[in-house]
Structures are given as structure tokens and as C-alpha cells.
Image 1 (spheres, chains in turn purple, brown, green, blue):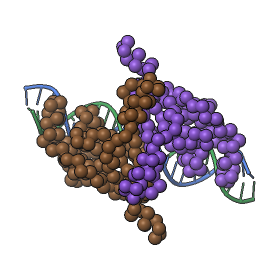
Image 2 (tube, chains in turn purple, cyan, blue, brown):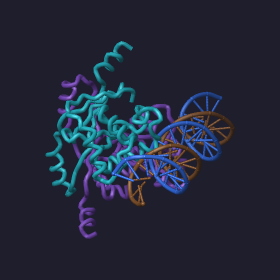
Image 3 (cartoon, each protein chain N blue to C red):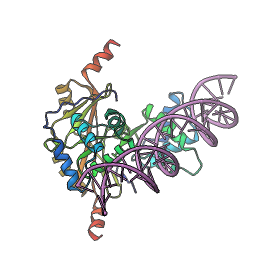
Image 4 (cartoon, protein in one colour):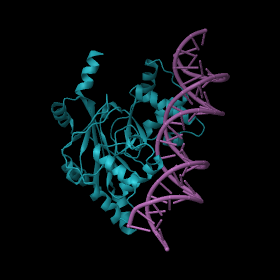
Amino acid sequence: MRHQHCHSDAKKVELPTLTHRLRQSSRKVTGAREAILDLLRQHPHPMTNREISELLPSGLCDLVTIYRSMHLLEKLGLVKSYHFGDRQVRYELINTDNAHHHHLICKGCGLVLELKGCFLKELERAIEGEHGFKGISHNLEFFGMCLACQKKKATA
Amino acid sequence: MRHQHCHSDAKKVELPTLTHRLRQSSRKVTGAREAILDLLRQHPHPMTNREISELLPSGLCDLVTIYRSMHLLEKLGLVKSYHFGDRQVRYELINTDNAHHHHLICKGCGLVLELKGCFLKELERAIEGEHGFKGISHNLEFFGMCLACQKKKATA
DNA sequence: CTTGATGCAAAAATTTTGCAATTAA
DNA sequence: TTAATTGCAAAATTTTTGCATCAAG
């Protein structure tokens, strides 16, 4: 995945709000965690641990710390993990404005657009009824070729 | 994922049909590949390389061969890979009867049901129009708790 | 102080690669 | 015969764990 951008109008969660939630769970607000959370705020699209590590000021913390932090943040419900079908886990800050959404990912350049809204609630109800499952959720991501990559391909 | 089952009425692809497609691509029909394809026929739901390896007659082939085979079979379009959100790649035989479908996965026991049909074609068109993307596809999987696991939880 | 967090090294687990030997066509 | 395939060993990744040290609350 070469580049990632995100078009989202959702209001950003404030950093103090996030650190407060750490303290509430008797977790400590450390330099590494603040930096990670702030990075996620500034790049509001799913990122891998490695990407996070590379974007963080060099030497700020070990990659192991990022693994541990992301597990924790996910458990505490501050981030959500996404899978774009390439066996990598990506984490995105959960924005209360825009909690549940899907992405449109360019297979050429890795551009990520955030899609507004979701249309599968009724479908989930139908599936619950038909199969007796409870507590249904879903993963849904779209893939395609963005305008820029279409042009690139045409001229190549 | 502890168990996997699949409810599918789709007609099974015949083994000779599959091996024929290997020969067409000037690939060889080996014991390992026949065994893998037959296993996938008999377990018509997505399986990881490790699961395939463990279900194959012991010592039939190396795990490396399975990795290589699955890459090849995917490239040739005989299998499709799925991601159930646990960072594992799962492969399923492509059945011409039932090429595009989604799954309903129990978070308790790993039961996998195959859902018939797909309802997102119009949605894909809408997204193409709105964002200028071309060739849109999607990944969609549902997760929940199956009846048996609901009971198990209630009595626990 | 006391508990939780971190770095570093090492272990574990997963996936890929090189190469000589083997086998299907 | 020859081009593709395989096994084995080894390398390259990726993720997890242990433990002593450090730091936030």
C-alpha cells in the first residue's frame, strides 16, 4: 500500500478526551501512547503497526511498545482494527461521530476513502432471523481503481 | 477457529474439471495438488494453509508445497482467498454455481455458514459513480453468535 | 510507594526462497 | 527429454514473551 489518504468530515476526538479514557481504566498516559494517539488523530485512516512506527518521531518508542499499545487501545475501545484483505491489521481511531463505516480502497495506489453511512442494519436483522445468530456485526470494504490510477494505467 | 461447517447446496466441481484447468495452463497434476483440490471439494468452506496441511494424509506433502500450491491455484482462479478478520488467509474452491458469496461466522465456535446471494451490486455502481472508481469489488463477512454457542453461554 | 509501561533480547510463529533431486507430460 | 514441482534447509518476516528497569499516578 503506497499512499493513504482519507476524506472525512468527522470532528476529531480531542487528545485529552483520549488520555482521560486511559486514566479511567487505570492505565498510564505515557509519551508513547500520547504520540500514538495523536498520530492516529492526524491520520484518520487505518494504519499498520509498522506504518505507525515509521511515522512516529524516530526512536520515540520500540515497535514492541506499539504492538502492546494497539492491543490495549483496541481492548479499551479507543481504536478499531480493520482488515483490507492483505493479511495486515490496520488500526483507526474510533470517532464517536463516525463510529461505524466502511472504506473504499484503491488497488493501485492504496488510497483510502472513508464511506459515510452503512446500509446493512436491516440485512443483519434478516440474517439473525434466518439463521438464529445473535449479535451480528460485519466487515465490509470496497476495492477498486481510483481516477488517478486509471489515467496512469491508460498512459502506461 | 475451532470448528468449521458449511451449509451449501451448490453443486460440487468435479476433480477432473479442476485438474484439466491445471493442464490447460501447462501446470502439472501432482499428487499434492490433487489431494489439495479434493480436500477443498470435500470441505467447501475457506481453510487456512495450516488446516489444509493437517487434514491432508500425514506426510503427503510439505507445508511449503501447500503455500506454493495455494498461491498458484489462486493465480489460476481455481480458489479464492478470504479474510475473516483474524489475520489468517483462508482459501475456498471457486464453484461456478456460487462464485460470489459471503459468510456468516460464529465468533464462539468458528462455525461458517455460506450466505446465498449478494445485494451490493447496485451499491457498487453508486460508489463508482460517486467516487470515480472503476472495477469495484468488495469483501463482506458477517460475524455473530450461533444458537449452540448462545445456549452454551447461557448455561455457563 | 505501587502498579503499570518500556526496552531489549530472545523466542515463536508465519511465510518465502534457493537449490538439488524428482516427476509429469 | 525438459520444464515444472517438490522437499529440505535456511532466511526473512511478523508477532509475542520474559524480565529487569523505569516512570506515572
